[in-house]
Image 1 (cartoon, rainbow, N blue to C red):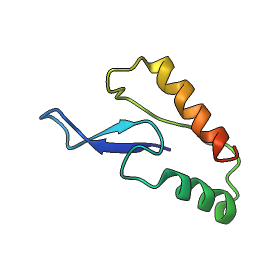
Image 2: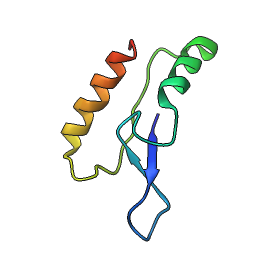
Image 3: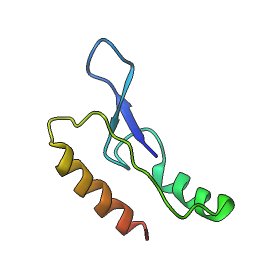
Length: 70
């Protein structure tokens, strides 16, 4: 799963970001995937970090998933 924001660079239109901060309603998507699809494992993808380190982003994404009940 991935969330995205409008990119600040010229090469791409969107870039990945922390879950819940972008244009994708990631919380709603995960709830639907769990309820309808029976999804039990989620893989979070993020290639852009908006000035944070990858490890800072991993921690934030994990904290968000935990708040959402995962």
